[in-house]
Image 1 (tube, rainbow, N blue to C red):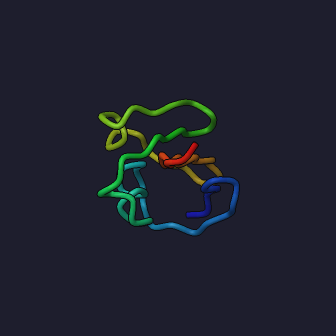
Image 2 (image 1 turned 120 degrees about the horizontal axis):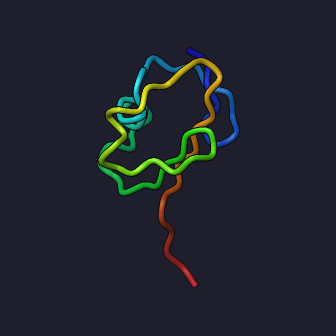
Length: 65
């Protein structure tokens, strides 16, 4: 299915937000997520179903000052 990930079009196999994080290699990282501009808690990601055209934002923490 075709979705947007961090503003870029992407073809993915995942059907849930949790599966998308695994597919993109984020499963071992602490990240923030949003689906169509709505924050998604980490404990809810396995229940959030992705649909064609959805926009997903994945935010990773950065160090620095």
